[in-house]
Image (tube, rainbow, N blue to C red; front, side, top):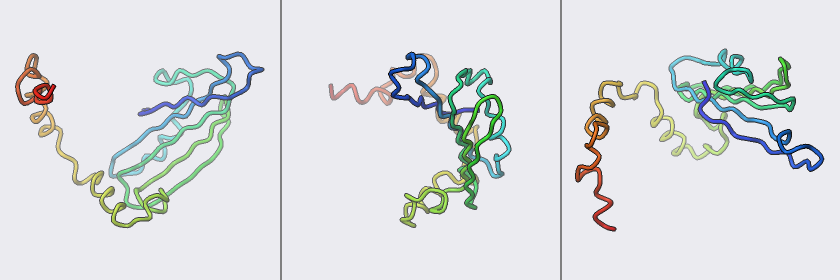
Length: 147
């Protein structure tokens, strides 16, 4: 559900230390279809977040696999106020730093849903390095020869 959590610190000396924090939760998706509806499922009470504070918090869902750009932001009030941001597509409309078209195209190709390697190939590729003891092989430890 959540790929990253960033603590937000409030510089308020009058508050006890444990009350000076809020949270930004980030979820990144790479599917061919929209995951916009999943944004509402990200809740403070979920066991993967387990965050209890009265401070407002932020949740961001990024849909990398879509080719059309869409950005929405709204504040919801479930138990606590939450800024919910949805960003779809890797385009300059979604992310302004991609205004360099060459960089935007390269990034789109890098995360293109159609170009994903099937799980079987990834597993076969990693298997030789993940088996017990195989990380001691020369091809896994080349960096140690320079030390």
